[in-house]
Every structure is written in C-alpha cells, then in structure tokens.
Amino acid sequence: MNRSLVNSELSLFSYEILGLVGNGGAGAHDLLRMAKHGRILDWAGESQYYAEPKRLAKLGYLDTRKEPGKTRERTVYTLTDKGRQALADYARTPVNVTPLKSEPLLRLLICDLVGEEVTRASLATLRDDIADLRQRLDDSERNAGELPHREKYLLLVNDFLRGLLDLHEQLVDQVEREFDKPRRTPSPASRKGRGT
Image 1 (cartoon, rainbow, N blue to C red):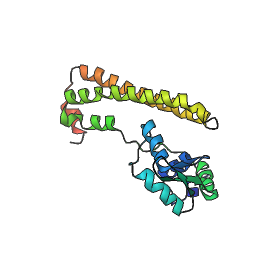
Image 2 (cartoon, one colour):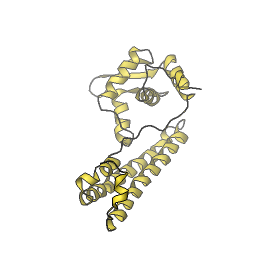
Image 3 (cartoon, rainbow, N blue to C red):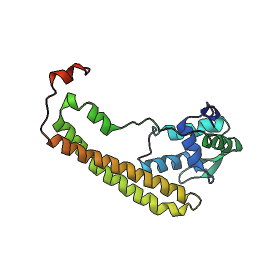
Image 4 (cartoon, rainbow, N blue to C red):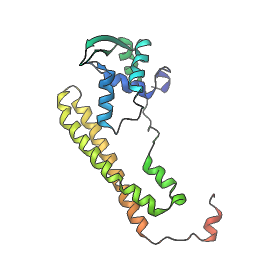
C-alpha cells in the first residue's frame, strides 16, 4: 500500500470525476451541477468539469455514449474496467490531509498589513456564506436517500463538512473575541526572534 500504486496520469480531480460518474454514468453538465450545488467541494474551474471527462475518455478510463438532451444531444460518460481498476488501486493507497486553500486563513495572514478592523468586518461576512452552505448540506442530506447505494457514504461526507463549517464559525467567533481585547505591544526581547 503505497503512493506508487496511483497512476501518474490521474490527479485528485481525476479520481473525483471518476467517482462522480459512478455506476450510473453522468454528463459533464451533471458533474458541474453536482459540484456547484455542493459548492463547498467545488474547487476546480467550471471548464475542468467539461475538459477532464473528455481527457479521461481519451485515456480509456471512461466510455461515452450519446443521449438526447433538452435542446441537443449530450455525451454521457460511464466507467470502463480501466476506470474501475484505477479507483480500486487509488482506494488502496494511504490517505493524506489535502493541502488547504482557505480565504479566512489568508485574511488572517495579511491582517497585520491591512488592520484588524477591516479583517474583522470581512470575516464577519463569512456567517452568511456558512448559512448558505448549511442549507446546501441540508438539501444534500435529504437527497442522499435517492442514491441508496451511496447514502451511508454521502451522509458521512455531510457530517464531516458540517464539522468544517463549525470550525469556520468558531474561527469568526474567536477573531471577534481576540480583536475585542486590547492590543499588546511585544517587548523588545520578543521582537528580536521574529522575522520582519
């Protein structure tokens, strides 16, 4: 069980696409819609949801078939044996914490350059975004029953994402508490060990 089992042709996003295609198949628009609805897991550009399935089909991980769409024919992708094998190989590899891209943490990184007042005000707007994401998770939880073969796993993901939203809310609370405290000036001795 090591990372060498992971195919160098495939990225984390490739495995996500293969997983979203799943047993039933999906069109590129379906993949984009799923990502946009969940939003909290939508970390690729919109065009990637069209480009990556095509690439995976060319490499033999997905098959394609044409189906009638609302206005024109659409391409539906399904897993090939090679695609299923790639997922099986990937599933046997160790799991790492994915590097985190976080706007709230970036705002704290630049706080000393822009000021606490503006940082506090901008981070407070996160509460509205959290509320929107909680609503989307509620919708996802209700819809999980429509996929009985995946329901247990989708609910586990939902619970994890709720915990992540809780962490964001705790961060906003902590920032507000910390920024309410009077600011301490570091002593000259403590400044010596710090970078500029």
